[in-house]
Length: 206
Image (tube, rainbow, N blue to C red; front, top):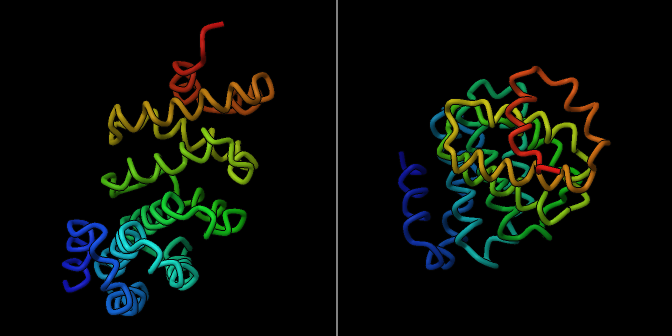
């Protein structure tokens, strides 16, 4: 309950939360390992909000946050909503301080958690992050094109995702096509027809 309140406060306060980071972060990091799925979920969300709004004062905790989040991406984590919130936290960290994240290590783990399964309130944050990296032609994410194509297809056919999220994903897919063109054809050919058709809507007219 306490961590849930902290998460809401961090979200609502914005930048002024920075002066409380050193008092709050140890509690949040501890709760990432809680036996309660609700506590782990709230702690993951809170860690992301603190990283997003805490400015430079959160940077010294980035490695600790990533270490705390890592188990939440594994098979030992039984709760999809916890994993979704861990993905949201990583997305916020990447968007605020991408240079402070070892993307070559983090992105494969992050993408394996996608598409989101339960907490679609995290969708815009997560897919904005993925799209930002793709649209900036980040070399680390461009090494994971097969995974991206599969994720994008699943997002586009999901009834749980908004048109706004799908449009964002569609733009990122179009960018991949502009970079790789015909090289992507084998990937698209291996998709289920419904997934391939959903992606086809974002193929630029030649």
